[in-house]
Length: 272
Image (tube, rainbow, N blue to C red; front, side, top):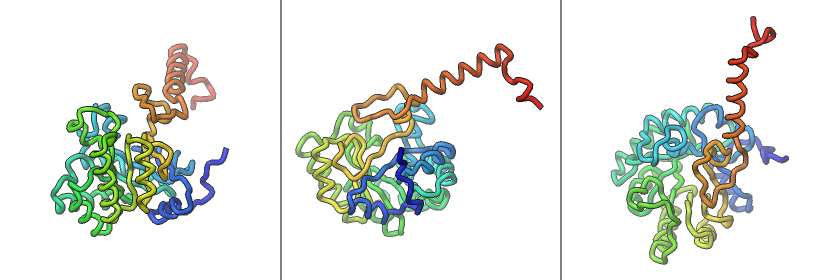
């Protein structure tokens, strides 16, 4: 099976633009630790997102809101240390980019300096345009995140598909065009109608990465614990599981327990 990793050059924002121009789909997964990041980087993934979804997958929180900047830096440093090819992006966590451009820039600079990451991902549209502009003007690449924005879940009150109504759909289009104008290098669109995502992808020159946004976008992102089948409690329509690591790891653990209990591990060849 081809891994599409023949090109060993470091992936940059410019290379993502080139991929969009030639119609090559962009692949992205989340990672939060050294071991997982090393595996998917060597497999040939184009981009790794150190997502604030670590709040759910690594800590067990119900939302992404509890993640702090210190926690994001910890996870991001681990991923950067494992990565040689993929472009590494870090989520700016809840409250670090929310209408105070100077404070937002300070947080952005801290993340970049302390992690060595390549870029940031920021949730929000025109409401935080001054924050985004300030960060980009400082030389920090930004991917925008629009559509369903998990940091705003308490405002929505539901994880349902966004932008189904004309008013919200038009705002989403306007926000995407604004983020492109501000200089964002790409946009993540989460859980919106596929036809709308395709329309936006055709309207903007920057890459559009989808999660639950259909196949008409420039690339796809999934949470690694979901697509690897480690997390069995989350089954949205857009998720395809490529492995069942929950069952494999459970069986391996039970086998280990059995061997230890029955005094079959360690054996003489495994002892000094």
